[in-house]
Image: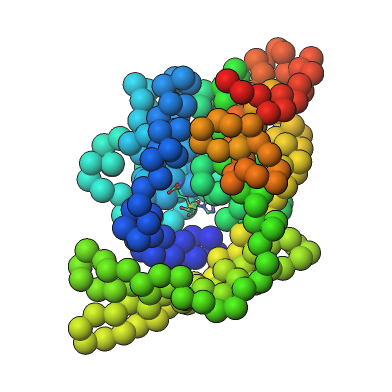
Length: 269
Ligand SMILES: C[S@@+](CC[C@H](N)C(=O)[O-])C[C@H]1O[C@@H](n2cnc3c(N)ncnc32)[C@H](O)[C@@H]1O
């Protein structure tokens, strides 16, 4: 199944979980708001989904939301649509001129939603290409998936939706090696007064280590790479951090060749 088809089917459940089943993650929203205040100019969000971060990423300059899924793009609220220019497309083949964006972000494990390694590499290379010289690329991944084991089918939640239906998620986790991935078999059951339907969605998330991510970024040409372990900008710790946020700088055009690729480990602002 193509990325687009998968996310077309998954969109309504993903969007129900983000904000209805589970509350909005305020530290995450604040992190992107602060980033956008610090780094100005046109901003590109790769894998923008249904605009969950549109409010945080809005700025004085334009924000462009790139997203492959029709359903995700359709689910943007009327007010969020005013905050960003929505464009359908994938990260590995971006419809933008080189150096167009001083700020490029790929939040919320979006890169790990791409199981094929060559496509992940293509996305990072494209992110480098469209980032303006002197601009930044912010990428969020979760190396903690590497500690995930297989789990039997278990009910995760049963939640009341705004339309009165109940949404139940049962999930089985399959840990795979070679390629290293975590496969989520999700069974979403929607229950109303007269019917009950179940849809199965399978999401294959790539397992990536911190070193793999840093190497990919450096090979693409990014220079200084700041690493945080959470939205509070605490230092990254392989054992303890819930996520990895990397802020990678694209050196100025004539400085790239002499760039030392300085590896700014656990830099705290
Ligand atoms: C985990 S969701 C995050 C959505 C949104 N950024 C958010 O934080 O709510 C990952 C998004 O990446 C998109 N995606 C998947 N493969 C992609 C690709 N190759 N290029 C760009 N986006 C992709 C999916 O359609 C999905 O909307």
